[in-house]
Image (cartoon, rainbow, N blue to C red):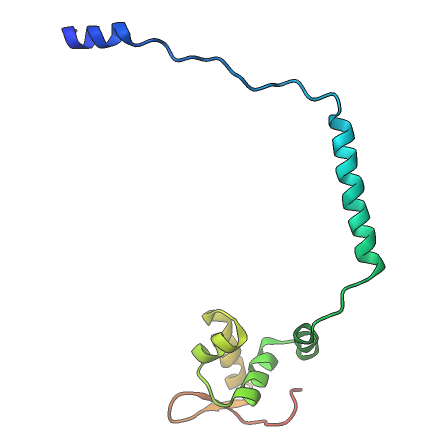
Length: 127
């Protein structure tokens, strides 16, 4: 062993293994837990007492039901668009928008114009 290594080892003290965490539970821990539970159960009771009104967007989603119908409704409102534009309008990812567009195409509800945008064929209400 070299002199430098011996000197370095001589001046290094072993790591301090003192654990300063207090592992004894507080005497009132049960009371704190019970008070938290009572607040949570009170909030649950209040939420059951006055249900929140549903949003118009949620009502539309529930009424239309499927991604195909939502995509068709977006086409009806916004006009011809690509699935990339539909992603922005509907707030979807590319896979979901692309699958909805493919399903509409397979169902014969859309066709593509010269620009490659989906055009809704059944302009009536969604089925």
